[in-house]
Image (cartoon, rainbow, N blue to C red; front, side):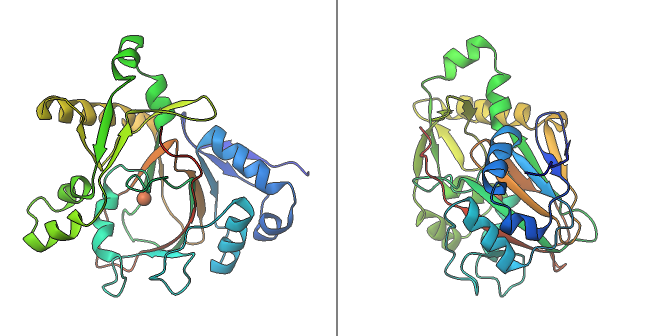
Length: 275
Ligand SMILES: [Fe+2]
């Protein structure tokens, strides 16, 4: 394979990939395995101003694995993320401002996400990424022992309440339709690596006093997402980013939601439950 030049984007997370265009992503036989290895090692892969259209993004995604279907969208393998009132999921996107991993309420969370910028915000609207592998590695040995067996309840009301602190009864009823899921705090991956599972859906450590639980979960989140541990991507139209959803949390930065910022995301189905 002809060489690929990369450049680190931050200490813990991310590389930019040069020398790769859409044609190479779709036709180089060695690219899929190379990308999956790089994703495991670096968490975020940035292809700056790649300008992959939906068909190219989907074709590339299928080379990496199985894509999740979003039946409410014109192209069911491309979720359009925007605050356009016509967007069928617009009401849920406000919670993207909080650190999370995609699919934490599903039996098996997403493996990775591929996202391209179609319309950017004039100010803000960046996406931030923080490694949850690095978060685990940064714990003290005492903490690793204390947290080894803890389990955490995750729920939609946990995350939506952060974005909507005073919900209407209708909103509460809507959130209650989502499953509640219990996960270990420490994810022991099949690779042997360990990561912390926290973020906006993490509502309560099982069996712990609620105040103590909140302090623990928010404290871990704050440490893991301190500015020097985060890669913040400022989008240019045409940028495509892939992130390893199993070893990272991410969030969207604030922007004027009356602006037509629009991102197109395809999601690689997971093959490993949090365990
Ligand atoms: Fe997300």
